[in-house]
Length: 404
Image (tube, rainbow, N blue to C red):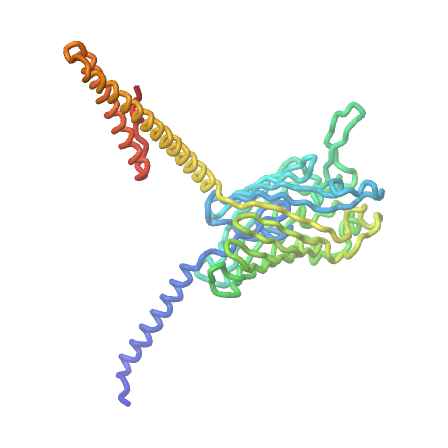
């Protein structure tokens, strides 16, 4: 078999390598972004309690989340009703410019509140390096409630005999200083499959460090947390994203939030999410009061309900719906006007026929008047029909035809 010249062989290899490299780069460019992160129970995007280095690429993407933690902290079983045991939370998180997020969280029914936010400094895969993780810095509990613990129950409301309320700090939380809580976190996304009709299976891993809510125990020691900490202020998390149905996903979560090991799952469909989590799993069952004030050091059940959408898309959809409703109303008015004027034309034609059957000399003036009215009505019907055709063909609104 004849061998090609060496120069030609090298040229073929170079061309094949260039085409392969171009195809790989093209494939990398067209790959869609990773599955959006679900919201933590109290603050922004992440896992269960810990954040992830991720910000949506679309400005005005927003999340609304309601969560609750079951804390059966009453010694008297009569006080352990579900409404009393649930410490609820409401948060709104908004993303802007593909690099920043900002939100507000209400911690409990009192309510206590705090702002939070994150800046994405490096996106996953920046600089053309596949191994490069995303990197973010952020803050939590920005506000006046400085003595919050990790459950965000450090502040309370007390009522006097006159029914007047006063904000107080529970004595055991006096030494907490958690406002603001600052952190840094790195996150790496790892695809586990190719892209399918429903989406791509993937995992992510995060590692970070923070102060305040991530490491401040207020001097309570083992009563606040007696096991589960890897290192002071160190937190980590991981998720597995699957797409068992179209327009939705199931995400399995596991983390260490600096204090405890937590795990759970979140189901999402068309922007609506529902999540169930177990926290302080390393603690096992219920502990006694001396080890945690009936609040800490035992496993707890948590759940969340949320909704995701884009504010601009929602507003645009409302405007379109309003325009469609206006055009529909105008179409109905025009059809009613056409029917009414057609009835008027029929009556005028009858009157004109009667006038023509009488003595022409005496009825000439009346006949002329009726003909003028008849022509005016025909012109009005023509204008209404023309406008109706414009609406049905999707043309912009025009000045309504004048009625009688």
